[in-house]
Image: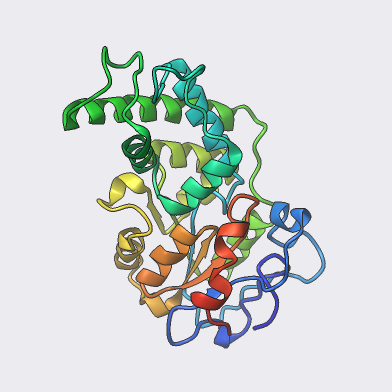
Length: 288
């Protein structure tokens, strides 16, 4: 199969899946337009053949179904400001993750709570309005992270419900054509379940959401991506072999999780993940 995810997806060839986990990555330099429109909006028709060896198509949510990384970053920064989170008493303002740093963090650590835990371990546990003093034991640290994450999740929901967020162009057509050809459809996201449910209901619609053959969120497994647990669990629920599945991901973490489960994986670049997956062209991937 030639071409890239940013140009077209064509499932008509039985050679689309190899005997082992593969990763399909664009070999050309992406323009900003391609990262905004990763699924085909015109030109070649995207087709999903009923004769293909592919039996199940599994989507990540954030960065795949919607361009969400900066929305999450905004929600975290709003939470840090709301709780006046400061890792240093000398900080002139609450913690604020800029675009460049969050892009790196997003591709290094899966899940919101692990992100905060890693950051606070590296930069010091912060003062905040959640607790009278910076947390110094496991229970108080868990309370701080849980409180911030819960508020952040509600803020993220508000952003999604605002009506300003749309699914990435072409993704709904891909879902519909895959479903029409008899493929199983699943969504596996490391994000909080309530957040993912709200995203899917608003962006793909209730009919598509309820028609999924499997839906898993970060709450459903003990280990977050890049651990393959979420995809291994999906295999059991779908009742298929890893060789019969194709995962659509956007990041190094997602790629590692899919490959760890023995699945083939397509990477759809976003503006925040393009630089992170580029080194994988040589070291991690082979092509079909």
